[in-house]
Image (cartoon, rainbow, N blue to C red; front, side, top):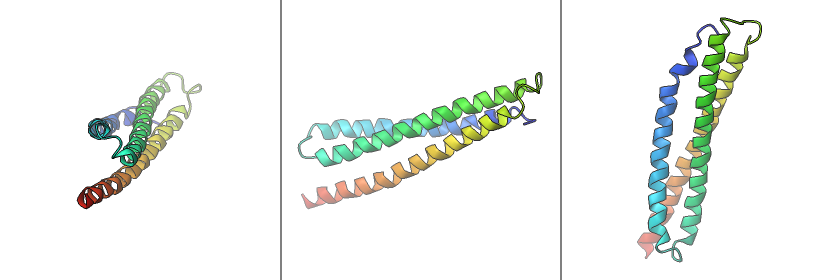
Length: 130
């Protein structure tokens, strides 16, 4: 990889994904705290929301790993200029790994989003019935 700075230019986008995912976790946590006050009535909903929290945690972990891989890819590609035989192609392999982790994290976040809509709809329906 001739442009060692390419993986590092992706970091702001990953940072925005991390920030928005953090906001989702905070709001989900606040919602769970409200539901726990009436835990007997909303036990099924609480369980589903805890499952959602796990998905968000996996997504966040994937984004953090991809960030680390992007930085490592930039560093190895940069040092390839000084020792091309030792680090030949490693930077590209790490970059591809980082992109794969971003893709997996995005799939997890898409699953979270679709499940969140289903959970909200079921909760609203349940509230309308009562």
